Image (cartoon, rainbow, N blue to C red; front, side):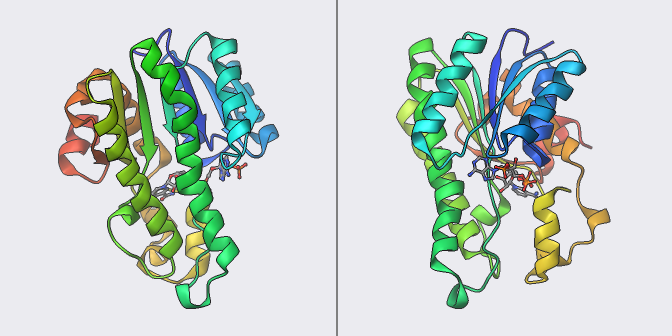
Length: 252
Ligand code: NAP
């Protein structure tokens, strides 16, 4: 197994892509720490991984709360003896609303989770990874980082900020063993898409559920990025929609 002996931390691991990533990493042999605000749900996923023969634990953690993130990272290192892979996946779509009528508090909370929260987790893991001589960080991105969509101003702005943060980290850590990527998972069948469909506000909301990609396709892409075959893509926003990436991942 390619990830035997590795330790991974996955944020937003209680459902959707984060759950799939945690299961996939564990299948490949990594010990996985799962984080989500709903610690009980994350714990249920972790127990399922253990029942399938994997190594996993879970902690309740809100990525907007830096002290809580720091504690979760320290706990992960203590329980599993290190930290090699971060899947920085926690994210929210709401508020779905035109900017003119948006709720300022809800708008700020989106940025607080999708951008500042992602920063918090990188900030908490990076020193240790540098001291250990390296590690892999995957910031879960989106097509929305690169194009505006009606009603998603907070989400688009946060993901665009995250994409620039990924590039900034690549610049600052070059040559120090840090494998940093953005990863766009495509339009996948998760709870987030249920909220998007219910809004009816832009073309993404019109995509029928049957046309969404399964989470497992995105997980295959994520796992590919964890391995050295993707070293030439370090620093980039890797998109599962990219035909060349799909070929490399084995999705064609
Ligand atoms: P999802 O089903 O709604 O799951 C989101 C996860 O994030 C949940 O586990 C949630 O758990 C967690 N989370 C939310 N806020 C959090 C916080 N403050 N602290 C810690 N955990 C938090 O969403 P998804 O579709 O799997 O999305 C996962 C990632 O993929 C997101 O970054 C999203 O932007 C990105 N993405 C998704 C799609 C898509 O089509 N679904 C497309 C492009 C990009 P709790 O609520 O318990 O905290």
